[in-house]
Every structure is written in structure tokens, then in C-alpha cells.
Amino acid sequence: MDGGDTTLGEGGRAFPETSLGLLGPLGDPDGPGYAQAFERLCLRYWRPVYLFLRIARAKSNDDAKELTQEFFLWLFEDPALGRYDPARGGFRPYLKTLLRRFVGRQDRDATRQKRGGGARILSLEGNAPELPELRSDPEEAFEAAWLEELIGQALARVRARGPASRVRIYEEVTLAAERPAYADVARRLGVSAGEVERAVGLVREDLRRELRILVGESAGVEAEDEWRRLLGR
Image (cartoon, rainbow, N blue to C red; front, side, top):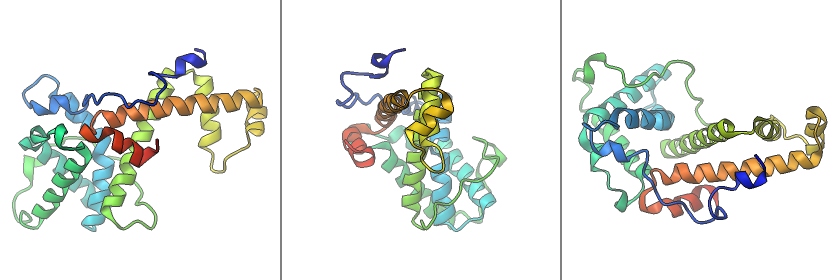
């Protein structure tokens, strides 16, 4: 795979048409793609939702995980997702509106039996996400976690496409605790400094393309504005 293979699209500047690939099947709970689409939704948004609830409700780790589970179960059972209209705006603001509505109902429903009889929608086992340092605003925490999740998914896609050697160079440069000089990475990996610089640039372009696709999956009419606001040009 040479350098030309990594530049996807026509120059990479025009924002891709919003596909709503993540959200389309969620409009039909009885459709064949609903369960898979809902699972993808959970995987993308459970960490932002968890952090929002952990901060907004001052919950312990276990309580916040349980409340996150309750929120997604509520979404699964409620027709709210089917009412989303991409022509009226992005999905993330809509989801946060639903999340705030859910939080507002908690006090009223505190004495009621928990929904679903203990049914599980997604696994929240393992270590809890760390609360962002010096961040006490649940909205900011949600946004930061969403962007981090998006970047992680984009990098996973780039890793899968490869080539592995190029991705490894990029990770050696960008994932280190202290950013190393290209010359140091080159010596460690047995390549030239020019190869390191080229690999980093190509992977960055791939990442930007994947991020644009991911944003476009659910940003509705605000896809271009969303991209500019979050990630620059």
C-alpha cells in the first residue's frame, strides 16, 4: 500500500455525505438491523453517559454503572430513538436531551421497581473510566469522553487497514508519555527519520478521514459544523 492508497476521497476536504449508518436502523425497533445498531450505539456512548451520570448524580462507580445500564435499557424500551429527526440537528445533542430527561425522572421514580427486572443491555464490567481531571461539568465530561471514544474507534479502523509497520511508527511517536524525536524512533525501529515523518503524516490523514466518517454517521444536518467545532477545518 503506497502513499496514494491512504488519501481517501477527493482531497479529503469536502465533508462526506451524512450516512446516518449508526442511526438509520434505530428508527424501526422491529427491523432486522435494530439490535445490532443499538449495540453499536451502546458501545459508542456508554462511557460518555457513564461520566455524565457519575458527575451529575454524584454516584459511586457501581451506582453510576447501574444507572448507565438503566438509561440504555430505558432507551431500548422507549420509542424516543425512533423520534430522532436528523434534519433538525445532530444526534448527540438529542441524546443528551434524553439523558437529562432521564436524570430528571430519577428522583420521581426512586421508589419504583427498577426497570427490566434485572435485564442487561451491555456489559459494564472492568475498571470504571477515570473522571477527567479538574472537570466537574457533566456536559464537558460527556463531550470529552465522546471525542476520545471517536478517536479510539478511528484508530482501530486505521490499524485494521494497515500497513502495520506504518501504524506502529505512528503509535511510537504519538502514544508515548513524552513525545520522542523522529530520529530516536527511527533508530529504535531501524528506519530513516524521513520514513518516520512520512508514516506519521499518512496515518494522521487516515485518522482524519475516519473521524469525518464517524462524525458524519450521526451528526445530521450539522455534520460540517460539528467537524469544524471539534476537530478543526
